[in-house]
Image (tube, rainbow, N blue to C red; front, top):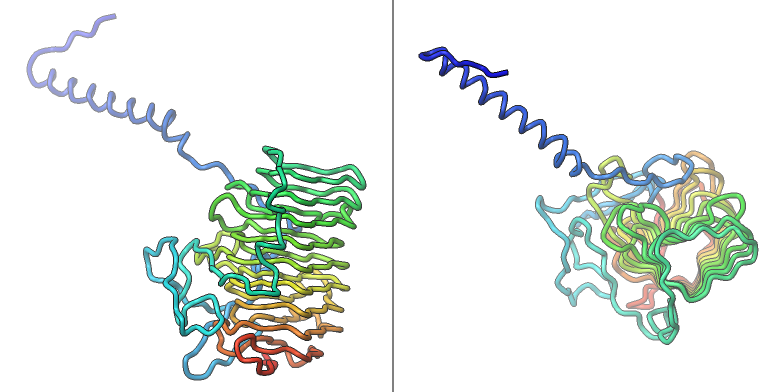
Length: 377
């Protein structure tokens, strides 16, 4: 069928209508083809039993005051970096005593909070992670373990390891959590994975991304491992946990974290949200922005926590204890630790509510050897 276009003004009007129709058609084709493919895929939600956002890190982000710091165990304020900040390194500051951040300088978006090299006698690259001569076999994708007593040895896993059977051992293994897999590198956070042993393992995120944690769960032992370039290195959700001889460092920090409802990330070296019979011993951890050890009672009571013989740093206050309306935390022992002087609240090594009694002794500042005092919050 042919269309006859009359001469004169009517011809001009019809040609104009035809041009508009053509433009609309081309636009629709672009949206249906290219535009739809550019929509980013939905990210996998982290499975922590639908905890509120602040329980993916900790409920505290303290801001130091140059005149008189008065930290509080329920404070949530933070100082944001300047607009347009991008990931990058920080200049060194020799006046920062033994700490890992220049005084008064905030982290940039997506920047790892770097740590000084380990000194003699503390865990570091020589004695944590995969042994240097260990040959690794590449495994692409997630690894789910459902065989009781299975031993995973000598893998380079580009994915996540989920332990769903008792008494599983993971050793001499590198875990690289892919971008878009915002969850834990290694997890037994279920009812079947008790007795997990993680030894001489390295866990890290493939790229800077909020929401990637290191090891998450309960009823496990983590030893002689290196966890770095994640948000929380260790997230304890229940009882019977030993964390010993590990090197935890270089947390990622984000001022716009979707897992914090768009607020700043609450990155901790270790967070305890429930459970008892928990021991943290002979570790070195630095670089967390929120806290080195964050104890809350987000999913249940916490009790019988021992923190001893560690080299500790980072955080607004390095050890931060909050009750979350569940009452005092019983059996808290903190002794014979050395604290770096890098807290954002000057001199705040340990903060706790007055209703929670903390038994402490032998805790000193690493740079001076002077005793550490408690802060009430």
